[in-house]
Image (cartoon, rainbow, N blue to C red; front, top):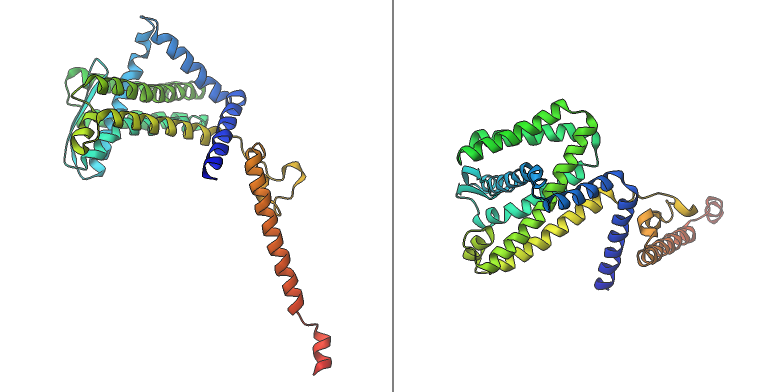
Length: 307
């Protein structure tokens, strides 16, 4: 039964995502950005255009380490990003396993939030202002990892703020979608790189840190994080762009059969059958309760005659 329900839900999610690709303009734009990004990666000179966005994702990765370190009672000493797109966060104290996991999973969560925020063009400018401000704050307080790191983080934060102040609403929304695509894409590909590094026996990585703390091989952690990241991104897309439920569709009274009035449920026969059975059971219970109430109700005139 659980397997059947999971399969039905997976079909529903796939159907909703396909509907979003066909009908949601924002999803179509993100898909186009994704395709162009993959093409640019194969072109030597065009790849330089994506370099600042890769450094942005590295900054997000290290910021997630720093955030969890602070939330778990630790102290952050330094955030550093390198020209090869790698990064380093030095911290003391805190819950070390959570801090190590926060980099890759936190980036995936942040990418999911960007996808969700991307559905709201009117809020794009405010979101960009918040992101730019946070990056500048991280640069001032923790950006002591060398000239390249400090200048890069400063330019990234200031650049995002500049776009939020100078660009029009449409351009702000487009830039936010660009950040969303690059963050989600790199969060998955970085885990792929981590997996290959774990296979090759790299000694310095978040997965290797988890191996030293838990005894579980680094390759297992990289696979687990990759699966979780894909689930997070799929869920964020589905929640953000699934078709909205339509009450009262198909001539059904939503007050009587609320479970089968949603548009997404109508697309799946298994869920539809379950909703119909549940609704019929509720109707039977309500009918039985009403009959019982009529049986025990005494007519006032008959009560006077008895007296």
